[in-house]
Image (cartoon, rainbow, N blue to C red; front, side, top):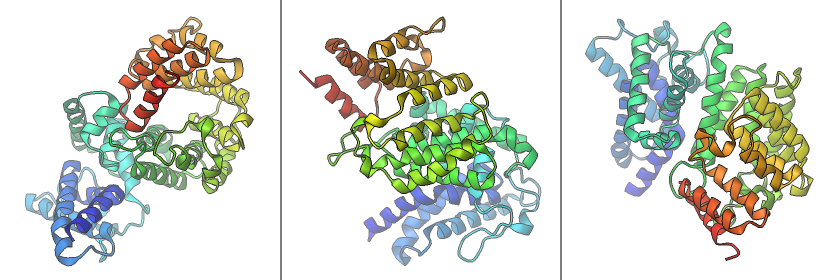
Length: 424
């Protein structure tokens, strides 16, 4: 029974954490207090569920326990009606715990978006916005987030603490922004949602290639953003991009859990339903725009669509993809985008031209010397692939060894080790 309950609590943490914390934050008036109350609710679940059985709606049970604890602590501190910096003014009128533990709201059907917009408030630095989203919306530990940002855990913990304190001191409201505020707020939110999915697509830690719970949360948030802003081209682009990426998930590893590159994937295992849904969104992401005004996620979705529409690897339209990367690089200059463009260039003009592009940036700093890519394993692995295709085997192995040194995901590490030893 203990194992069953522990598994149920772990599953509820993966699937319900964001919802429970978001609902509790509306009552707690403080993010630290909300986190404490939610963690307390999960601890109580381990005890009560063993005695009473796992409830039919674990998330509702956890929400009820956490929000009641938050209200109790606030009343005890005497701040129930004097200081509510995170709550909307009409909280008492339109919110109350429902009998099944849910939260009644006539404003928006999911409190997680309130939490995301609070985490991504423009008063916070962008790195703090994303870190808070990963911590509060996704429930990642400070250690996991620190790994993603390549900083020490203590540094990341201090950064998150400062961001929470700024929210509290500044009285940042816990709400969806007004319509006139959305344009300047949406980019940071979409960036955060994209990173949530990315953290699930390739796990920051653990024994598996992915973290399906984070990938699901990222897609869920993207769907809600699309529902909130149905006329936004970039919300359509983000959702299309995530769906097209997720559609390939079942083919990314073989039966022995080894990494399979896209060129070797069995495309019959790609999720046709997700692809069809995404392809319907791509025109909305690109509608009414010329190539000089396309949004970043719209272009990225178009690139993913070009891969999805190719029945075989050999049918991939690499010239179209290269052209889209040119557009993306012009609209959103980034070393990572430039590196991805090099990969496309290799299939258009060959590996030698691509290798030159790594080392010759036409007056700009070469990608090989780009500080932002200094510990980025995909730079070294890309160089390794290009060198291997040119027959420069020993140089290729050295590049793969460099990539392996910077790779934390065990599935990717095993793949790189195979590249190092192939042909030996």
